[in-house]
Image (cartoon, rainbow, N blue to C red; front, top):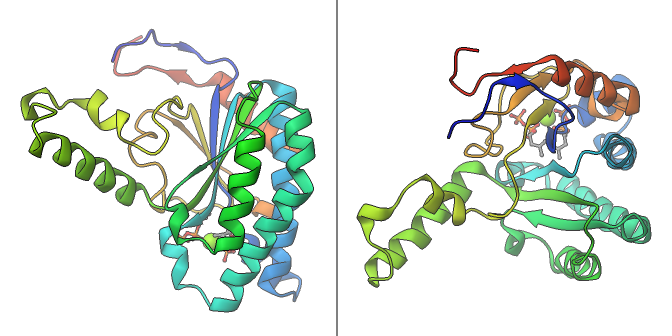
Length: 240
Ligand code: IPE
Ligand code: IPE
Ligand code: MG
């Protein structure tokens, strides 16, 4: 896939691994859930900042398939917080013409969360200014394995010739095939790993690691990441 190597402008799609809520709380002697609450405020701020600078797609890694091993009370707190966030932000998202979408194994989530997600997704489905994508019970390997299963079924029933399976076929069977790949991937709290996030889609994304913990990552920090991105030269394999 050849694109011209050039200095980047505003990223169309930013994907964020929101990490460090627990450490933020621990530093203050607070419970982990307080860290998640403060992290939810960062989400609000960053969604607004995306609109201001013209980022069209924002994917937030909110809960991974691996996160189910955490203590039950923390998981329950996170689910309640997600429900609260959606209740509080639904009107604002809609007024700002933002469409809410979800990527991941939604079927794993508690019923009250699924219902709320369904409601807000339905209410915002025709919004066009931007998309807020929540990665929930998301795993990159799960997503790719799921695509492989669907492709295998099509091949087994004679609807697809195995010889014709290519990158586009795989991409078409991911959770949100119409969403362009992220241009910029931000991870907070200084960790240098992907933690099973968008393994296929991040293939050519620019990475930006912030030392700030997610609750401390606000508009100024986001704008700094965008500025750095603008100076990156994306070569896509070319020599320019
Ligand atoms: C990120 O913060 C939020 C989720 C993974 C849900 P953490 O909860 O991972 O915070 P740390 O990494 O323990 O500080
Ligand atoms: C990644 O953060 C998942 C989310 C931000 C939802 P984790 O805190 O779960 O990642 P690891 O375990 O440190 O790799
Ligand atoms: Mg973490």
